[in-house]
Length: 399
Image (tube, rainbow, N blue to C red):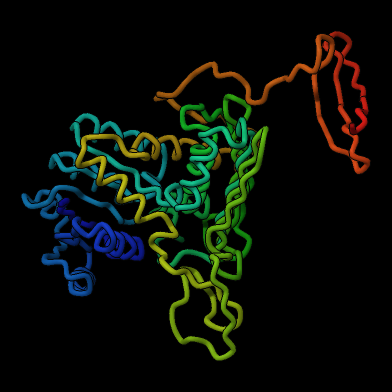
């Protein structure tokens, strides 16, 4: 059993505790920390946590604690990570790892210098649909991955600090773009270096100093593209969708607005429907197990199994650092309105990787561009001459 100190009693702390005390119930939150005595006490009572505190140092240094989970606002992550590392505790941190890449790199260096286990709690790469799709991609089902589009949009975050750049580090990009960027990295290959980013962002709706809508593209060394779309101005609930396009196939994933359960209610159910749902009347899309659907259950199963076995989780602080570096480039691109290089003073992946896609020989003189079945049953071939570059077509009649 892993005995956990949970730092933070907000929505993410609630999801984490529900997951930890649920299907993998041998792990327990033994101590909860909040900056508010009232919140700490109420949270501990609700989830049957034996102890609570408002002293962060006391929480991470507690002799009965094996691991520290950080579910605090972004600007407090570094302080908590350093404290946990100095206390020789395993440390698991929610997304984004830091408010920028320099901060994340310091956190990575702190845990590695201390030699403690570290996990980056990026739940959306652990959703059951995503894990299934990743397995298919890794098995070669869709060939080389050319393009990944990841979208997360909703009406805006639930706590005030998200809307304050001093505490969050930014707006929708750092809040949700971190999810989308890491989803794309997993499909493209986390050992493929992100090279440059182009990004548009604006504050379209809300009276705040951070962006509430953004679209960006990340180009990888092998030519693959990761595209992220994020918004705090989307109405209708939370929309989580991913598309993966390869040389030999395509995958579409819809995680939230089409959950497999659809319900119409004229009178309303007078209660919670699903995260970021805006109404309890009309057409509703309830979720059977939110913690599982959002990846929290599989995430903690992986991370805590690896902690016990001495292995490496699917996501660790190095991944969080790479994500923050891409986000930094995105924010710089918003200002310059140009492609902006991703600065990675620490890179542990491959270099000089081949370009995605392959030229396919048709015969000694031609490359095959496309093969298409026609309505007549014949097959049309589009060819390119290897020497002259001339493009031509042939029709092969059906037998």
